[in-house]
Amino acid sequence: MGEHIQKEQGLPKYPQSLWRATTELPTFPRLKKNIKTDVAVVGAGITGITTAYLLAKAGKQVVLLDAGRIMNGTTGFTTAKVTAQHGMIYDELINHFGEEKARFYYEVNHKAMNFIGNQIKEWNVDCDWKQEDAYIYTQDESNTLSQLKNEYKAYEKLGIPGEWLESVPLPMSVHGAIKMPGQHRFHPLAYLKRMVEEFLKMGGEIYENTTIGEEVETKGPLTIKAERGNHSITCQYAVSASHFPFCDGKGLYFTRLHVERSYALAVKPETAYPGGMYLSVDKPSRSLRSVTYNGEELVIAGGENHPTGKSESTHTHYENLEKFAGELLGARHIPYRWSTQDLITLDNLPYIGPITSNQDRILVATGYRKWGMTNSTAAAHVMTDYILGKDNRYSELYTPSRFKADPALKTFIVQNAGVAKEFISGKTEMTYHKIEHLQAGEGAVVRHNGQRAGAYKDEEGNLYLLDTTCTHLGCETQWNEGERSWDCPCHGSRYSYKGEVLEGPAIDPLKKLDPHE
Image (cartoon, rainbow, N blue to C red):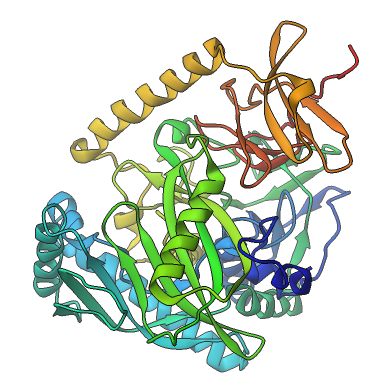
């Protein structure tokens, strides 16, 4: 498929991640029996795989489960920057949490980067691991320059290595930039594939296509159950590494997280790339880094963030990135394009640790704010130490039970008012397409038997008709033409045009409707 896409001009017709396209991953069976283990890890992305590996290395019996294929969530669709420079975050952390915790955030993410590098060296993994300087920059003198200067002052207060610049190596003019030297980038799936192999050598078990239900038996050993087949996993601890927790535990996570999508292109530039990893702090965001592909250098251009389900034309975001990359470096061809989504907490710090203060045997890791490579690795260490009964100086920083009045309360109110608005507007929508007007490859909201429905016509003319009501909490999904999916604007669940769950928190598929009724 990759060779076919490369011959096309402009954007590839269908989205495909470079990481997924260039990695042959093993397959694993669906859970078909009741099992007992020390720890069950739900979600086989970088968080779950790293946690499972660390626990198995410590002598624990571990089972790793995923609702789909391993590494097929955000981990397989990242830009894969391995850095402690996470946009403009340190000034904000100082203001809301104090200097000590802001310094902890840098320390734990820097250590996570070093852990990844040490594992790659120990295993001699061919995963395009390369040291790069990281830059955040602004081209907006009026709005973000002062914020960027405050961020640099935060670097100085915290002792973070950094340099203020008036220019960057890219062929663009900027009003200011901060360089953080000695960061890295890599091929995440090549790295994780080797970690999976090591996990299996230590006796770990992996089950794919196994969705875990919300009900958990907490009296005595924990018991969680697979939705399909109702098979149970009995364990001492369970780890949720799957975006929204598979079990909320009355932690109200659906009200304390919001979901954003972002986009990426892999571009063969016409001019030489100067090296480095870049992120604009302006809106819309722009991200750049290089990658080695088939012996040549491509540039990954990313950005165009928006709340899931709240974009009138998702394909436009790809076109905007194509224009950006083309004007900056030229675009000889674009072999891959992809998008992903990530969760953001009320105060921009991940939730890592016991799901609630009353339920300390179910752990959660989520809300990485698009910086999952280091935050996930840090999460794996924090949760592993917790399960092993070891102290971890960073556990309090990430504890999910925190709730700061500033800025969390304001964000909580605004965020959930937005969910309520989406719920109501989806139910009262008055604009519909007609099924007979759909073109091949087109999807839209239609009226069917007097009710709102979702229709998609494939390239062969086959019609797929669905009830668009999200099976999570009843919001109405919206059509995403860039990914050919139905996306929920309330909590980020996504479904294929056939109604299958692509991303949770939803567990059940959309209801299929009969086009002939």
